[in-house]
Length: 253
Ligand code: H15
Image (cartoon, rainbow, N blue to C red; front, side, top):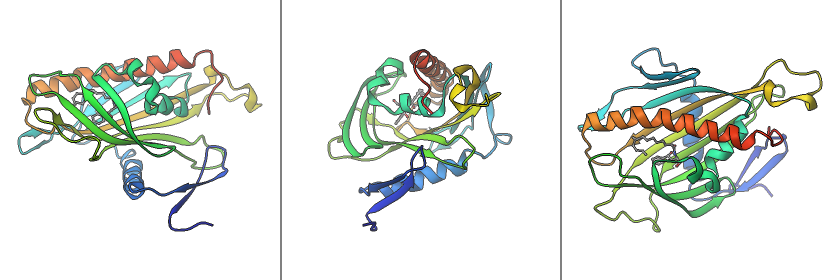
């Protein structure tokens, strides 16, 4: 029976999926919908292009809250030879994280809320002249079918939450974040038979957005310098990693 405690959605192959709700389901739903709305807002007003390298563009808006830098960040990239499902899977799955992350000392799963939603506790590398940071966030992966013909949109959202298994222990400071990776697969010059699609026929349009509050004062120039260096570095390293990992594997649509 389908009750208020279940969520009905469609999976990648359009079959119905029924999931039990959990204590954070409503939050997850709200934040996912916010990102889907926000992703198509353009960056022509108020955003500075802070880095460009080929297809990769990194924009930021300078914003401070009580003297703390909380600059929203929006990155666009197009990656040849991989799908949105593949990018999102490698970004979301715990087992690959330390292969591509260079800004972490550790990561662990502290709760599994449903097969697509985990709570992580991470300790970040101390990268600027300030106390070390940690983070606790739910991480959710989702496939959204737009129409019968189009490839689905895949996304991962990481959103700060509190958790009894992750108390804040000073002097460590907690980062507050709302981050999304949103991916759309494009089939170029599609062969007549879909079975014949090769990696050279696919590319993926990626949007990565991050709202990160450092959780305490950090010198503005230092923080902005770190962000300007580290986000492009992350995008480059992460996407190269996925290309490398998937090269000789069957395409995961
Ligand atoms: O998104 C990235 N990494 C994921 C998976 O590890 C976690 C991230 C997150 C960050 C903070 C809190 C919660 C979740 O979504 C890639 C992150 C690249 C980080 C580039 C570093 C920018 C440094 C300035 C921002 C503050 C520090 C954030 C690490």
